[in-house]
Length: 454
Image 1 (spheres, one colour):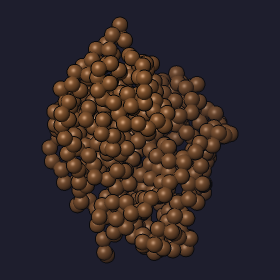
Image 2 (cartoon, rainbow, N blue to C red; image 1 turned 90 degrees about the vertical axis):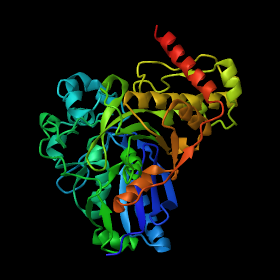
Image 3 (cartoon, one colour; image 1 turned 120 degrees about the vertical axis):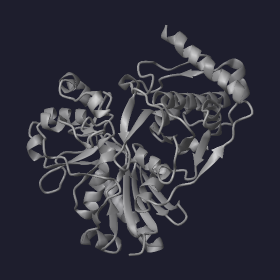
Image 4 (spheres, rainbow, N blue to C red; image 1 turned 45 degrees about the vertical axis):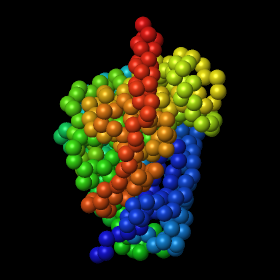
């Protein structure tokens, strides 16, 4: 069979749902459409518009195929997410938004059930950021839910199920602070049994497995060939990591940016992860553990920038010693218990955006240090277009900074599940001329953090 060239990628982030068409020969997206990942308020709880996404994906799969030919389909989604199916394959309950605060109501009861961080590599996170906490709260809210749930499928595989009819979960999604997986042993934890849902997790598979081919109904609706294969699918930050795992040797790290900024270290120094600082043991596309740390950087950038656009003013920020201290979104990241503040309020948009870019770089550097990252740092996603952020990070990281060739690493990475011999290119970001001044500014930021703690 001819190797697939045009891979349609269902790519659902926390902010937007996207369908991208990736040309594997050119290793780039040749068509992209998006829609907001709007939260439906409920009842019974805030949930995602799965049927709206599905209609959107099918419509544009047909359009992509008519214009370019679609050879295969892959899927990548945000983590902390699963879909509960009944015995007929329909929703047993709406898919809970992980930012809903409902699970906080039963936090004490959940903490008595969840396995330890040493076992799962999952830190205890607020809201529904631990998938197990979502399930625990949902079961308490709806006493009949446990009887209706026949299968628990991680989020990428829900779309795969709708495309193929095959049920699965994937290890990279189970490894995303769910409390449901033991990364070092590559098997499920005891939690589902403790929740009364034992035996209902869809079979865990590697992200690169072919889940199956599209159903006759999907072929008829979209015009795609009936033999079109669908990959099992992958957690989005691990999709960003995958292109750099392929064909690369030596230690390196990836900073994947979007709603979340996630730092992942490959082959770095041995270090003890600190669950109180939002570190975790991720699981890559091949099922191997990857030390990781994160903060909600994309959300923080949006909150502070407020849509402003202006050239950055580094000279003013350096001269006035303007610092943004964490955490803009409290409760997560390396400084979860802090409330953000400005050491000196910026007087114009250029200063604000420059200080914000440096804040993003300093927070990324803190995450990288927590996970023992060594070697070059590869930045992908929106941050790869932020020169001020890249300058600060390059000044701080001895192994240098590289920029991923694709502006959106998740879709490219998911497409590469069909091309395991390929590797995405990167471009070195030069060390800035004012590197020493940036390092001094970073030391000043650290000192301001220490003073704020006392």
